[in-house]
Amino acid sequence: MNTTALTPLTARRGGPLQGRVRVPGDKSISHRALILAAMAVGESTVTGLLESEDVLNTAKAMSALGAKVDRDKDGVWRVRGVGVGGFAEPEAPLDFGNSGTGCRLVIGAVAGCPIKASFDGDASLRKRPMRRILDPLEKMGAQVLEQAEGGRLPLTLQGARDPLPLEYESQVPSAQLKSAVLLAGLAAPGETTVIEAEATRDHTERLLKHFGAKIVSKPHGELGRRITLQGQPELEPADVTVPADPSSAAFPMVAALIVPGSDVVFENVMMNPLRTGLFTTLKEMGAKIEVVEKRDGGAEEVADLRVTTSQLKGVEVPPERAPAMIDEYLILGVAAAFANGTTRMRGLKELRVKESDRLEATADMLRVNGIAVEIEGDDLIVHGKGSVQGGGEVKTHMDHRIAMSALVMGLASEQPVRIDDSAFIATSFPDFTGLMRGLGADLA
Image (cartoon, rainbow, N blue to C red):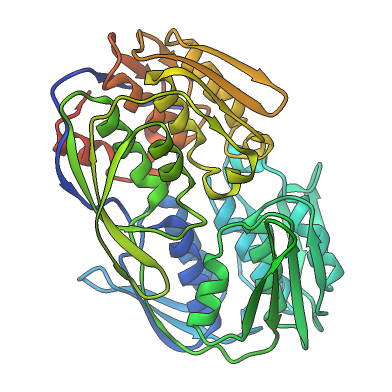
């Protein structure tokens, strides 16, 4: 992507947001569905795939590794897999653009194959830490041949010829780290086990089971899980329907809560309890979020949600909720700014190693628009007054979630809010501006 030509965008207060929408397919499941389909034997279909830059880069990586990946005219993706351990050595470096999820998961999948592959990304992804996933993968037999300082991209990995099973106790609550170890463990004999002190999103475990792997997840300690995978399965081809992404839905949902007179229905939203921490928090703040219909969506439960304008109040968000809403704290900061009273979000250390330092970036986004905000350790404290002055220009730092959060703020603030670059919104929500304009938002 050309990052030299910035594409600024401004959000202005206007009329109510109204309508019925389906936000894009879940990004986490889209990445995993492509990877596991490529590791199965036979043809799988993926319906509702998020066709964002991040996910398309994962699709390209699967093709480069030897899987056959095609998109039908009706939008259904067909993936003919090569089997566990069957990836071919790619001819060129695998470029993941802005996607930490795609890159880390594919590193894990490649680590169990006897091939050499190089991994790279854009300037933002090159700043993000990879060492945390490389450490356990090296214990399983993979070798890092080349790497940038601190284990960052670009790096070259030699996958294990005879991968070893591993029992690994994660030191940080990271679904990407857990998933990388499990994907590598598919090619190892015996059992690979990941122990996490805090349960993180379990899409990899659910989809592994969906593709025929033997995997067991049990409680561990007060909040954690112990996940055990039986290695060397022959993954079966499967059909996957990707539900709407709750992390993407978060932005228009908060907009509907803070823009006066709004009434919006969101269709087919994934309701995995390890992904709905934001919904829980917003309800504690007084948000009117009604579950219209809940149903089985295959590997995940889904629901239609009706969201209407609400008077919000400040709350304290416990640190143990962070894994269930780690991507949503930026937009929660916007909701907190429009609430009455102080909101304290605890335990946000993981935000510092996302596409940007999201803890500092969230505070900057709020301060430049007149909100009193503090950072104490890993806590973010927002002093809401029920309204926001606005009028600021927000630096997005090549981060799609900062961009969308700032634009949502501008839809209800007294003065317009401008972002310096909207280009990176496409990494997760390609038609964000179109969807929001369709609901009545003033974005120009």
